Length: 518
Image (cartoon, rainbow, N blue to C red; front, side):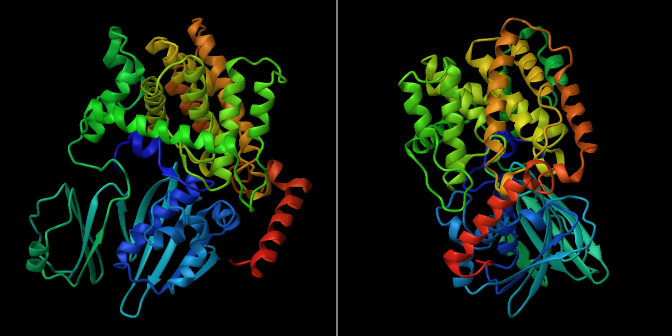
């Protein structure tokens, strides 16, 4: 699979929906499935393994919304996404969702069977966290794609000769009478080349990631340890090292990287403002609360938290935007979308710093996220909320040190201390919605990041190197019960109060549309 990119895997996607692992990833899987059918879909069978996370979460956490939007060819920030189920019906696509016992090793596995009057194809894919995906097989043949390439798939006779094609990679998949030639490149294979090959069928799966993949990438480093060894006594600021990494990964220049992150900062600031102004959405656990917090803060009626109170305001505002299906940035995930940007933007505004300084801090955080994603995951279904809120706090701590003009080593120390404080955090969404205790965990992540940033600026010793902390978190997740990893089967999710809220929301949904399957 392609190496981690800050803009693919860590700070992004720009999206709507409660969960990037569910909604954004499902949408990307749906987009690839749509391409596999040339956009002509009449019937879809979706199967979820009973032992995974999706049978109990696919509806309330946005998998259905995202998958349907992807099958319709929409983008992750499309304003129509909350009504994608109705749009799918209007498009004449018959859909069936079933729970099966197949023992899928990954908890976020999508098994799709798609058909129309002339053809049928199957696709198995997984959501790996933060909106990232991996296709595991097509039509029963094992292959890999992550949505970073233009993928040309050619169905050929089993005895078709070997071909010399200009591409980043050409892979031949054969099983029995079937051979699929998978061509990964910066563009689709030319029509004239395909016509010479005379394939039985040809499919074109367009990339779904903002930073494309390419061959012969030479990354400067892929771990914190390797980065420190390379930079040694130079003590290059973390944001500058992030630019160096992304320049090699994405093949783009410093100005473009900074401009991309400034654009993301502007999206986030707009979302924060809309959250404070007030949000509404019927299918949610928590009502609009950030506006009152701002009023009390401005009136001096809250405890004096200094800049932390502004951080709390911005975190709650972003979480409310997410809950109302507004536009957010998964940084690193939708469930943990508020801690990092809320902390960075609030603190930068308190320090009267501009958007470029915010962008540099976000890049520093993005590089810390690269180390986490390369070694482990952002998916709560795999690692619990320590993978989401813990990662967000770790990244935010480094970003805040960067805002304060701290050194490279202080930023890394802050990241290590912040992550150490978040190990073991479970994922137990109340009423099967990604709202609470997610709000409290985002607040905790941001507050913890601020505390650890100040400790690092005072040169407190983190004791454990960052890479080892990440490895420790992974080891904890390996021993974490399945019920505590975003299945709504443990923790607060199964309290009587949570079940009562879920029942009330379900009844409201039925009363609105007259059907529990809408």
